[in-house]
Image (spheres, rainbow, N blue to C red):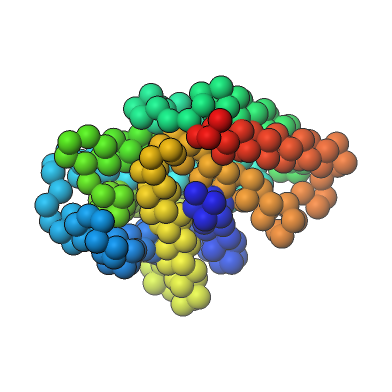
Length: 316
């Protein structure tokens, strides 16, 4: 779960390493990285140990219901992630991730707990309440920092919130595909999830190329072909990093004392990891007023305490 949190909170740095690259173009390589990552982990970790069927057998013999559930999860995640990447481009890592993924944590954890209860509910939901408080502090810090026009600033917040609502709905579908009499393995579920991501990206990302959400001019596929090789590389790396976090999180969710709700909640500690990248590495709040930075301190405190409560929920 901790490795999952690190991966989910760090993949977006790959986009930061492609300055000037429109997110719609970056995303084509990103989804390929997600698919390649799922296959790579399936053929390695998913085929070792002899605990269950190997990855290829799981994929070939999977029932229609688990395939559909994991694929739908991939579609929902993909739409949410496209909105989130647009929000990152507008508002920055330190804002888009805490607002969007923090909201997703609340929705995903509650719905996953309903599907498969696990852990102390008082610790789990108390921690989630603190995460919500952290989101409020982060939004306040962003409002004080905002140097752009009010419409652009609000667009970033609205996109983050929309991404959070959708991001919180994908995990229960994947969790359901791994439970029940016809459940599939976490590695096979990751593959079907990745296929859903790729299939959804073709129409949705193309639509966003024609009608960008950031208010800029449309993007063409000709520009994708003219991208430097390093930008393609970082797109693939970003997708592979996110997929690694997803595979590890799906595996952890099947541990007896953990359950999907706790695994997802800890993984979404990615919000704090990404905020650290945005604040300390990319200096997104360097020019912000002191009051804004004080809000960020409280945001980190609430995130740390809230995630600690969620982490202790399975054993208390």
